[in-house]
Length: 191
Image 1 (cartoon, rainbow, N blue to C red):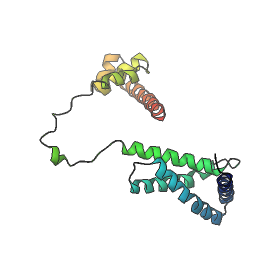
Image 2: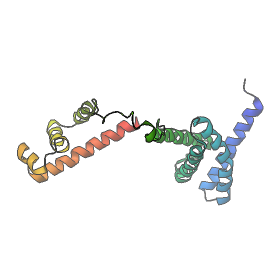
Image 3: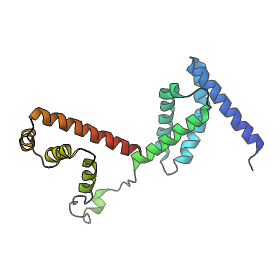
Image 4: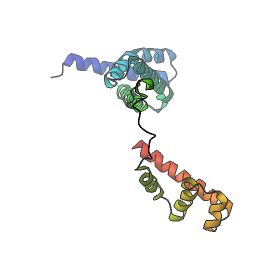
């Protein structure tokens, strides 16, 4: 069962943060300083709890990124909403970003394993299928053009001759196709 005193403290914290951030957005620099002083220790605990496994220095970097994001995006906060959940969401996203940046890397000196290192890496067997999946989102003619230039290494002129297109038309179609593929990639990264 949640303690009523704890609930009251949390409600007071949310009200204070909301009041201070609202005043800060209205131009009160003192309120902004007080807001940052109030949120920093709490956000530091959130980052440490959610970032368990990150080195202490990385956690502190995440806290700084959270504070910077709050500063840069505070105009996006809806003043009719409490500030605490908005701050917590930023902290959560920055911790996830830190784990993504870090990946699952382990740093070991190569010299210790030089005799055991495998032969040169082979091509990724799924790479061609991945490329074809992306290209399937293009019109067939555009996909053929991207394959010819991007994968087969043909020149603009060679591709234009083979596809009965001017070099300018090849460049325009290539540009539009790559732009469409980049947009598709961005949508997939957001998922």
